[in-house]
Image 1 (cartoon, rainbow, N blue to C red):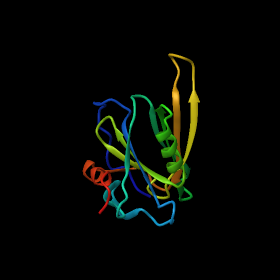
Image 2 (tube, rainbow, N blue to C red; image 1 turned 135 degrees about the horizontal axis):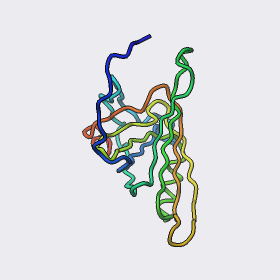
Image 3 (cartoon, rainbow, N blue to C red; image 1 turned 45 degrees about the horizontal axis):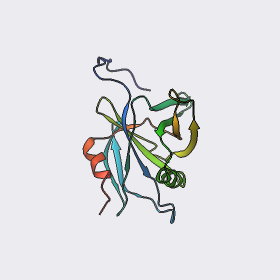
Length: 177
């Protein structure tokens, strides 16, 4: 059992929301071999994260108020059975042939996701076992409605999403050599 040792003093000084999503496959869907070469974390932050040769994460530029990300605690701390139910939902406008191909690829296996928040910080979701992805096509009313696809990523893990630096994220966006 631990005791509270500090308070909370941060004030809201930045807008909420998500600026960019980065999505990567946990494993090669053809071979099942892990795409993650190294991964370590300490004190709630990723300290090293590299991918196997030729693998990379991909950015999804999103419109304001079109993405939500949650990490809800489940289980009982007293029974040492605590976990987090994670979800990242993104509304992606359009429905091109390229998007359909990308959706088929992203649904083929489990993914991990980095959420770049509007406050400039990054959080890594689904780092333990990856997320499963569902794609839902949506056509709504003219002018006020949405025409696109909802990408819904869900999974459970034993820890909260981890903070990850811009430098590590930038390295993940270039194919590993």
